[in-house]
Length: 252
Figure (cartoon, one colour):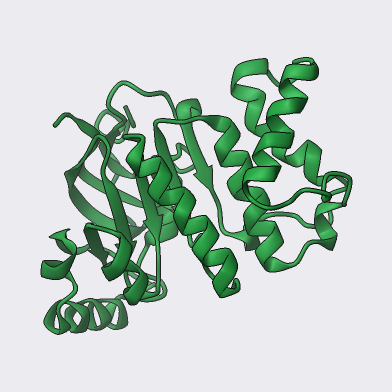
């Protein structure tokens, strides 16, 4: 199967200090991949690189013919400014910007699609609520509704089930399985290993660098998890900045 993502010796970081080192590998089109690792392992940094928010310090990321705007990226809820004065309906509607443009009109067809997405995630009746009034689970449902509208081939979910109730987790996991069943490529950064074992056939174990990548039962061994924990503990935030090669650091 063709690769949807290719990492060629990718190093990502901030102020030229690496947070993810020398990642090589491929994600097949239609894969359902969990990305796990201790806190500070670089999962969010990797996802920002995939989404085009963060440029690699070195190496390259190939998107299999897609452009960054073709990716549906769900950030952690902590990255959302809940004080911004926008309604649930209008926030979810931003998922249509790829098709309508930033200043595109919102006709009946678009409004119907937003209403359908809200219904699909169980947010009927929340259309006019300010996003700052939502609970953690409701906020996550809203973010999933926006992803639904984006209709993307590549979906990147950063901690999608963190700090939400079991019912919301189950509902949103059902959406992830549905996307996978449609042949979309889905990556999710996760902490709950039981969820990974039960629902994700493939796993990348990250600890600033790759520890193991492959079938989930082969990756989630006690030995690999111990190595990952020790690698993160040994990481030196004061390490020297990486040298950057302008040609090799361009993302595809």
